[in-house]
Image (cartoon, rainbow, N blue to C red; front, side, top):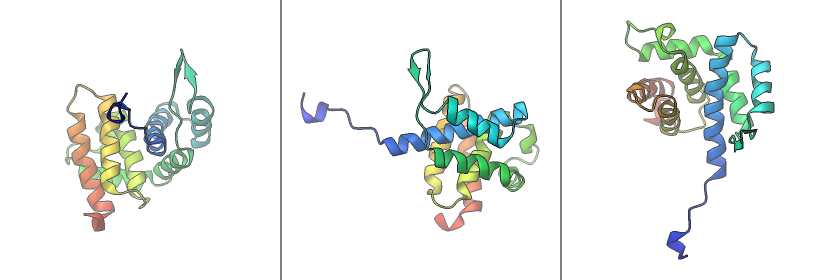
Length: 160
């Protein structure tokens, strides 16, 4: 096997951050539908999802610090994040009327955009990829990209 045939090593840190973002969307969705507290959902995810094995498949290990930060920020600043999302949506479609999975995604992304350490374009790319995973056949990825771009420009105008 030549060097060019050798698979590139996966950036583990990046992979763990991507998994944390996906888990944050799932946790926020679960909280909205179950009425569970932040503490109970975060504990459930950390204890039973991060790196767990189901039917022979191992779930990704996530960045626990990022996961906790995204869920906590999304819950603590939900009203502000929802207002930012509403401004990015068409006036006839307030956040309360959109798909609950997308609502959770916008809240997690809004939480990361407001933390100021990840470049906004990275946040947009990561959450568009998550949208693609949930909606592989739909137009949702273009919609998510447009909304997140608007949110990022509002939250972090200096980055553009």
